Each structure stands twice: as structure tokens, then as C-alpha cells.
Image 1 (tube, rainbow, N blue to C red):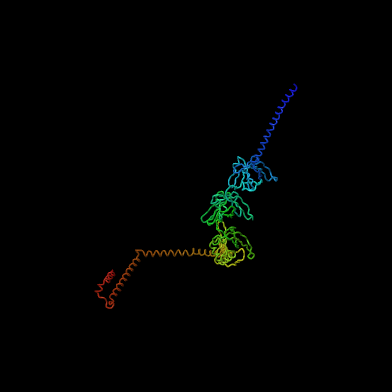
Image 2: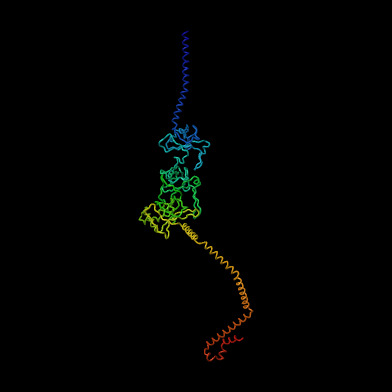
Length: 555
């Protein structure tokens, strides 16, 4: 009984032990499975996650950890996982985990910026972020080396690497009203914009980088001319008032324009990165090439109020240069302050005339040849004058012209720059003549002349008084007698007056006498012998003229 009972209890203990082990295994399976799942997720995240980068911004406005996405063309490529201040507290560092498919955004030339609502020269952007919140936009670089630390842009770049087109560099004396994003026009159509600007290496100008989108970039040729089209160009000429502008946006935000001159038949498409000069206006841009410049000086004795820098210099009405400086000098001999004007002239602007002049100098176009040619012109009377270009504004310009009977001057061809002799302008001559007249008037004895005039007027007054008191009454009596005489004459010449009847009878008698004399002369011409022998009675009776005269003589 005892053995049987012992064996039974052992058999009952073995199944209980197996049950406990099985339950222990079930308890560990769940953590193991969770660990396996975690490991798999970690491996999956590691395989699917891209590089981690750090972007520096001036402020973290609009950025939130684990919420702010990173987008490229509105596709999420990463997320902000951390934000912290730099040690100097001047910037913030945003940690961004990129997706595995966005690993190329870690290239060293990649760009990042925060998209917020902005108002700029190109319009209003980022309006959709008012509802969805700000996000970080990215632009992939051209590839190459990668890095993990980037400096974010505070404003969106005007040009992204994905846009097709070409970049060109323009050199200008100053920036003017241009800015990043200012439009670039070709025949008044927007084809690009200003991408960036920096000071030139020598600090004497500004280098602007522009981007012209494809396919319009092919219109930028090696002979293209660029000019600043900002603002409004207002000019007054013989045809009236003219207002010219590219578009409304150029008035507000500035802009550029370019075109190829018509006299450029050999122009080809420009390569990317080509360098051009930026002119101040369209007229200067499309002007023919200036050629080599020559600097001259001119000394004027009269004041030059109204003459400013960039005022034109003309030769026989053709603009060949501009004024670059206006300064005062002191002459200790005359103790005066002459005005010294410096100007730059471009002989090539004379066209065919310059070519013929170069032929006269033996084909040379250097400073010595120019000095010899200028000396010849000065001997012929070439002088510089300051003339009025606008009577309303009083602006002056320099005119190089030949003056008749110009006094001879000494011209030194060895000095540099060359000194061109001057003469007074037309208005100055008029002023000198007026001053001479005023001087002569001031030297006249006006007091003596006034006293003599007063004495003459007094004498004249006495004479007039004497005439009124003595002479005029006598003249009145004489006139009355004259009127009486004329009345008597009129009465004598009236139709029924005896004098007129007697006068009529006298005239009749004179007529009869004249007729008798004529008859006598006619009779003698026909019968001259009658003076000796007399005329017979028959001949006298047969003569009709004698009979008529006898009949008229009878009463």
C-alpha cells in the first residue's frame, strides 16, 4: 500500500512541473517578440532614414519640433526634430532629419529657407502658410561633397537650381534702385530677374548676377546691350514731351532691359557667365562704340553756374563727350578765380570725319597725333564756349566751334591733359555789352543835361506864351482879311458877275484875232505875191477861209 501510494504521488508531480515551465516560456515570448519588433523597426527606420543636418537661422519664428516639415516642390522630404540656441545666442540651430530618398539635399551647395508670408518686388508669396503654418523649403544643389551644417537663407532665393536658363554678370557704377528679384526685360517682355549683387573686387562698382530663363536665354548675344530701365524717362524735345518706361513694376521696384543693336550682324549666343556693362539708359546703351577717350581741360573766366558733371560736350552740334569735373582755380596775376572744366571726349563719335582725320595724320590715332591735329584746329580758330542749353532751367553745355577773328593763343602740345583755349559765350558777350552801355550811361553828365533841358523847356514855355499873347491875335486878323479877299474873289468869279462877262468877251475877241491872223498867214502862204501887187477882188471872194473869217468877224 505504501509503495503504491508513493509511486502515485511522483507521477502526479511530473505533469505539474511541465506546466510551470510551459507557462514560463509563454511569459518570455511576449517581451522577446516586442524586442524583435523594436529591433526590426529600428532597422527599418535606420534603413529608411536619411542624413541628419543642422540649419542655422536668425530666428525660430514659425518652427516647431516634430511638426514643421521640410519640403521640396511641396513634397515632404524631412522634419524638424530639434531647435536650440547657439552659444552666443545670436542664431538658432534647427536639427532636421531628412528622408532616405532626400540624401542628395545634404550636398554642400544645397539651400534652405523658411517659407512665410512675404511681400517683395515679385509680388506676395507664402500666402498658404497662413493656414498650414510655416515650413522649411529646400533646393538641391548640383551634387558633389556633402556636409551636415548649413546656413539658412532669410529670404527665398530668386532662382533655384532646377530652373532652366543662363546666368550672366553685369557691371555697373552703382546699384541704383535695383534689388534681388528686379525683373529683366527683352522687348518689354519679362525674361529673367536679378539673382544677386556684390561690390566689385576693386570697390569701384557693383557686379550684378542676372538669370534669364530658357528659352529666352538664347536672345542674349555677345553684342547685347543692357541698361537700367528703372523709373520714368521724361524728355522734352522739338516734338514735345515724351515719357518712356518699361512697365509699372520698373517704376516701383526697378528693372533691367537688354536688346541687340541692329548694327551687330556677327553676334552669336552668349555663353553662361558672360560679362556685360550696364548702361544708365537706352540711348547710352545703343550708341556706337566710343573708342579711346581723351581728357581735356578748359579754363573759363566767367562764372559757370548751370554747368554740371555729365553735361554734354559738342563739336559743331555733335555730342562727342561729357563734362567730368568743374573746379575753381586762382590766378595771382589777375587776382581772379577762373573755372577749370575737365571733359572726356571720344573722337570716334565723329564717324567718317574721324577716319579722314586719322588718314591726314598718317594713320596714327594716339595722343601725339590728336595733339597735333588739335593744334591745327586751334590755329584755325577752334575755341571752347559755355552755351545755354535750356533757357528755362539755365543749364549749360560746352561747345567746341570755330570762332571768326579769334585772337591767337599759345598751345602747348606736350602738356597732359591738353588745354583747349576758351572764349566768352554768346550770353556773356551780351552781358558785357549791356554792362558797357550801362557804364557809358553812368559816365554821362545827366545832371547838366537835366539842367539844360529844364532851361530849354523854360525858354520854350516863354516863347509859347509870347506866341499866344502877341502873334496869335495878329495871325487871327490876317486870316480874317484873307477870308474877306477870298470872298471877294469868289464873288468876282461868279457866273453873273460883270467881271466874268467882260472876261468872256475878252476871250472871244482874242479868239477872233487869232483866227484872222491864221487866215492872213494862210493867204500869204498861198499868194506871197499879194504882199507886192495885192490880191484881186475875185480871188478874195473865191477864198472860202477869207469869207468864213469875214463872216465870223462881223457882229
